[in-house]
Length: 204
Image (cartoon, rainbow, N blue to C red; front, side, top):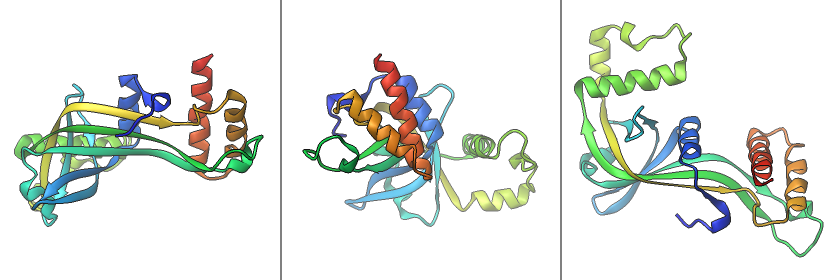
């Protein structure tokens, strides 16, 4: 990923936080000599060594992905930044965003390891107070459904993050951008404004 110095996320903890919060990623690999991509939920294990996920068995991307080095791109909030918000007309519009890229090799999984990865994913998004429990689903139904997916894990060997939050502009201009973004009713604009405010405080 192209990361200008201003925008690089150096803190690994921040990378893990983004992966946890924005777990619906795009997984890129090669399939039959062509680029392939699938939007898919991925979850980091407790040891932070692997990402776990699963394909629909009907998705051909899994058929030659075993042992491949792949890229998982986690997409955080993003929004348009108007140059009309600046104090000068010597500027152009841009886009602010946050993203994390994770690289690693794939290993297909099944059995207990697949079941545990599915349980962890359901627990994360259902929440501990949900009435839905994966281990309470009829075993025969669950077995039939599991046959329709292919589980995998990615052994993480590299992570990099980018937070493009107008850091290449003067502080007062960044504050103007925050002020305009906070007027918006859209969640992404509000989140980018929040990240920008945190970034300004961290630089003090």
